[in-house]
Image 1 (cartoon, rainbow, N blue to C red):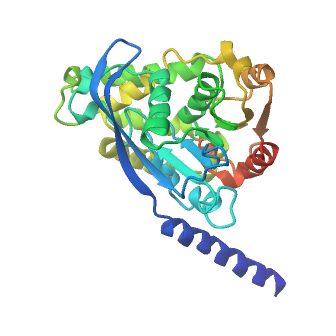
Image 2: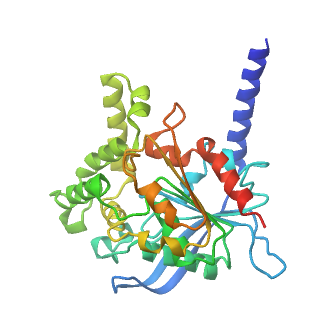
Image 3: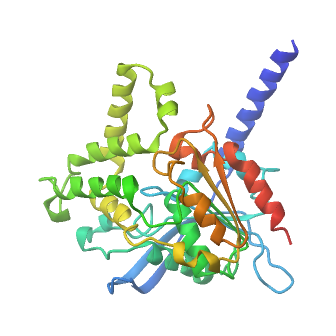
Length: 356
């Protein structure tokens, strides 16, 4: 009887979270930067930066915003991806760690992604060749000029956003109190990580249907790209548990490929993966002033624990800590970064450590 009661209570709790997440409606907007100069030397007359916010900024006695939290998404994603029960329902609801009644939560779409300016808007392969430094500079402009936010309580980043967290924290060391990079490494993109990115870029560009970027329908290679992204993003045990038969694997691949043809764009994908080409925060990690809680999962094929980068590089961060989450039934390979139920205890520790 007691077990049944606990089960019912758990189900009701989860339904409450899902409902709360659906009721958490963000404010959406665009901030337009005139004549944005890219590191490549290219200039875009108007750079549109799309964003979503939850909550209200609160200022301290000196007039500085004290409750702003920026959450940065992964490659080919957008800030909208965080507005789901598995993320928003665990973090943003009343009483949760990032309760939107207490925090001002900012979910930007990075350059080349979501509702922000991107190649598919019309310039195609003539769009400026942005990199992570450009994307971080744009985030800073959105915060300071667009949203009038002069300080971040916290920067959380997943995958590409994880790498952005490192770049932001060392580029603007006095701007952020705490950073939580999830699922990346603070070293140049090389090894298998570079390999799968280069395969994706080459597959699209060499597709006869790519036409130098001026295609009228998505290149057929986007099916292969989507399949490769599925392969590299899921942990081996996690994927096998969900797809233990040949038929289920084939069906999962078919869904991913169809989704890729519908929701991915060839030029946007090339640019998004190529943006990591010169990423390397390692020389300046000792300049980071923020407290850093760096978290990876042991079943992440993109950032495998056999590579010692995390343990070695975190030693350079004055207030840094690295956590490797063991493989379990709760982890989802690289995608563990978007499951705060798995890592929220470390977020809680970071918030307590940096309380004023």
